[in-house]
Image (cartoon, rainbow, N blue to C red; front, side):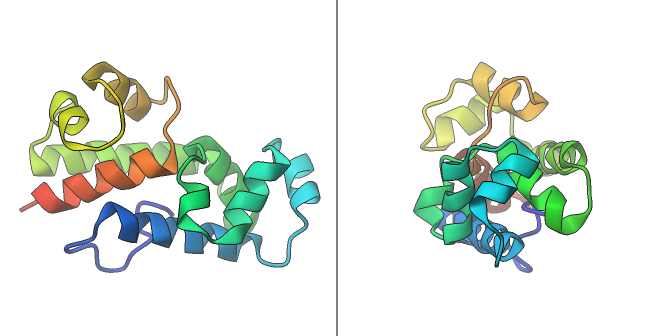
Length: 144
């Protein structure tokens, strides 16, 4: 989920990945009432509506934790596990691509320091889907 939103990531850009995240979230919310989902998940109704829209620009600011809470409903996997797997996948990709947090911070468009990237990867601060897409695209680009 999210980390494997594209079957083939070769050459994938942050925009490609964000579009794939948007499609995955929209499909998970298809036919659902935004207010009911908000009540079930604790995610703000406007955020649920943004995810349901399928618009990559709308989901860029969505926090990974909120996306995981919505995906829990359709996947039957606890949100905490989804969140953990996404972050773990990023860290494993960093090792393969030989990237550190300072390099990621310098190479992506998100206004994050190396320390903030590390905190986001560890789950100590927010990680938006836009930031996730940028990090994942950099890892894909740098992986052998």
